[in-house]
Amino acid sequence: MKTAAPSSKSISLLTATGIVVANMIGTGVFTSLGFQVIGLPSGFAILALWLVGGICALCGALCYGELAAALPRSGGEYHLLSRIYHPAVGFLAGWLSATVGFAAPVAAAAMAFGTYFGHVIPQADPKVLSLLLVVVVTLVHLGGTRVGSGFQNVATGFKILLIFALIIAGIAMQAPQPVSFAPTARDPALIMSGAFAISLVFVMYSYAGWNASIYLAGEVRDPGRNLPRSLFFGTAFVVVLYVALNAVFLRAAPMPELAQKTEIGQIAAGHIFGEGGGRIMAGLISFGLISSISAMTWTGPRVTMTMGEDLPRLRWLAIQNSRAVPSVAMLLQLAVVVALILTATFEKVVNYIQFSLTACSFLTVLGLIVLRVREPALPRPYRTWGYPFTPLLFLAVSLWMMGFQLRDKPQEALAGLATMGLGLIVYFCSRANASDPSKPIAP
Figure 1 (cartoon, rainbow, N blue to C red):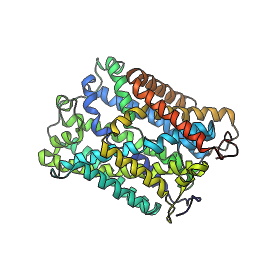
Figure 2 (cartoon, rainbow, N blue to C red):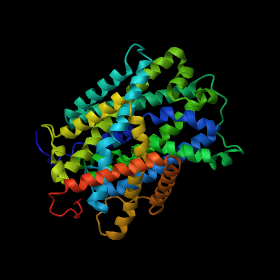
Figure 3 (tube, rainbow, N blue to C red):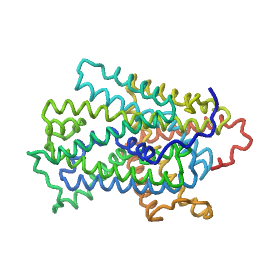
């Protein structure tokens, strides 16, 4: 075992883009439509909802692209917030990522894998399948970046082919539902309604992951060029897939049958391919989730590793194996994932960290404006398209989402803030041996 050393630039633009796509396409797009059709019984309004969410995600990706290109170091918001504001602010973001920010979504996707695959092999224990999957994926990524890249590319390619097959089959089906995607007189009122606003919060969660490649910035080839491209291309691609996929779901199954259901993909596939085909598609969807689990297994430990590089008392978190993989950080994340799967507490965890994660993204995009004002001479290989309107739109939507979360789920939001407070205590204890705790981390 060895401590962290500069990583080789082994991640290509294709792999970095695939990481963004894999992180974004998780369980959300296959589960959330059932709750949207209740308050928005309109094909046009629902597609508008997913398009608006996609535009907001693209705004965030464009902003992160400038920051990541100017400050190319692995660690995501931990590194960026440390550099822009203060190491303590960055540590709070890293603390969330290192504890449950990545582990909870991995656990959720793994449990979804077990549930979907259970439709193919009813006698299989979903929890055992979930545990087996996260262990195998972790072992793959412990084999090195080259092995992990190959596995990630194959898994992401399979997921994209699966979604394309579902979209094409849905478009070609002979007896679609009588749903119209053209605007009607009632659509403006639906788009301005509270139901649209509430649904947008959950759509934005489905788009989460658009910033994934910045967590591996230090390992990406030509980061000034490839990081912004990976963020934009990956996010734009997923926006197109999400809009098309939801159109197919609405075209395939009647809205009353979808209402309040979570297994949207399986229901739609059953109408497209028949009952037997629906079970097969459920199995394919479960394998499609492997890509998301792999991407988060890869990216999450890089945040923990970067924290270990900077903080004396957390130096053990930066230990790498002989293949330059942050093995301790990766095994630590695996332990948290296993605990969440065994206790089935990940849903509560995801709910209470959502406010904090939104706040981290808000502060990061705000940091783009701060750096433009404070350090105008900072080399910027890429500049955000549409500045300042692009970051202002993202900030407005994020602020609205946080306000909604405080109003609708105050206990979860306050619990997230309490977690950040605990992280602050850990930070100052970890910096006890540092010569200058207030000195910002270098780019």
